[in-house]
Image (cartoon, rainbow, N blue to C red; front, side, top):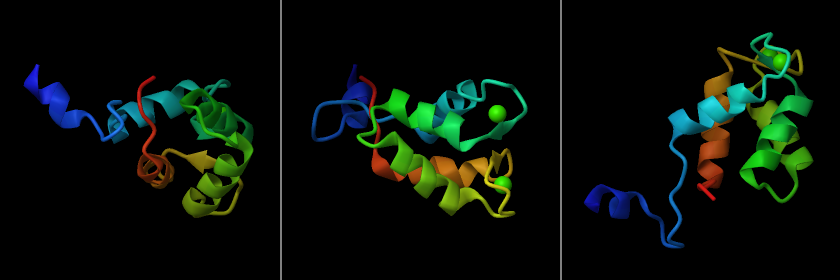
Length: 92
Ligand SMILES: [Ca+2]
Ligand SMILES: [Ca+2]
């Protein structure tokens, strides 16, 4: 399938799209309050295979948390996703 080859990076793995990342992060909203806590974000980064999920979660929140409540809500989610997207996580 040609389109799959186009999506493949140099390593031969397929990177997640921003849409896929969004779905993954929302899956880790375990208490379903539409807010991602640091702990939930940490689990998402762990799932994505981050080397240091704790560090990624802190950085991600710092980037995305506009209102400074320490949580990422739906309006802040896009900034968290673009942070994760730039790291280039790929499908295992
Ligand atoms: Ca939550
Ligand atoms: Ca916030």
